[in-house]
Image 1 (tube, rainbow, N blue to C red):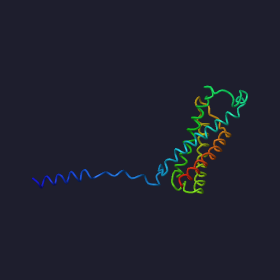
Image 2: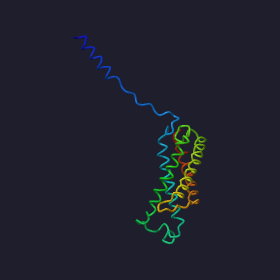
Image 3: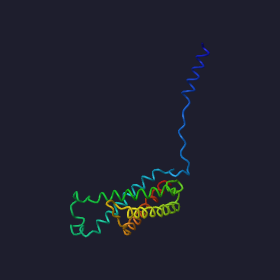
Image 4: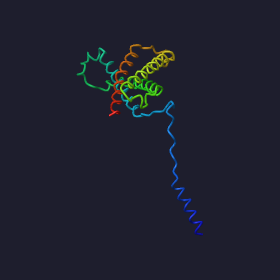
Amino acid sequence: LDLSASRNNDEIKTATTTTTTPPPPPPPNAFSYMEEPRLVAVDLLAFLIVCELIGLTDILISSGFWKQGGFLQPVTISSFSNMELLIKRDSLMSICWILSSIYNRGYSYSAISSDVSVLKSSFTIFTDYCSLLILSALGMAVLGGGSGGGVPVDVFELAREAWFTILVLGGFRCAYSYSQRW
C-alpha cells in the first residue's frame, strides 16, 4: 500500500509542475511580424494630426471663413460639418501607411535604430504609401463613389496629403527613434 501511494503522489507532483510553454512568436520574416508595435500607435496618432492639419488648411483657404470673422467667429455645431471627410481621409491614409510600413518592415528595431535608418525606412515606406494612395484614388475614379459616376482624382489633394504625411510622420518617427535610444 505504501508503495502505490508514493507512486500516486509522484504522478500528482509531476502533473502539477509541468507547465505548457506559450507558442513561439512568428518568425521575423513573416509579413505581419512587428518588433515595435507601439510605433503603430505613434503612426495612427500622427495621421490624426495630419488629417487635422489638412482640414485646418481647407478651412483657412476658404473665403467664407475670413468673411465670417476668421478666428473670432463663434464655434457652433456647423463648425464640425467636415467630420465625415476627416474620418474618411484618416482611415484611407492610415491603412495605406500601415500596409506600406508592414511590407517594408517599418515596425522592426532596425528601422528605428539610428537617424539614418529612420530616414531610409521612412522614405521607403513613404514611396510605397504614395503608390497605394494613388492606386486607391484611381480605384475610386474607376469604380465610382456610388450612383454610377466616378470620383475625379484631385491631384492637388494627393500632393497635400503626401506633403503633410512626410513632414509629420517623418518627424514623429525621428522623435520616437530618438526616445527609444535614450
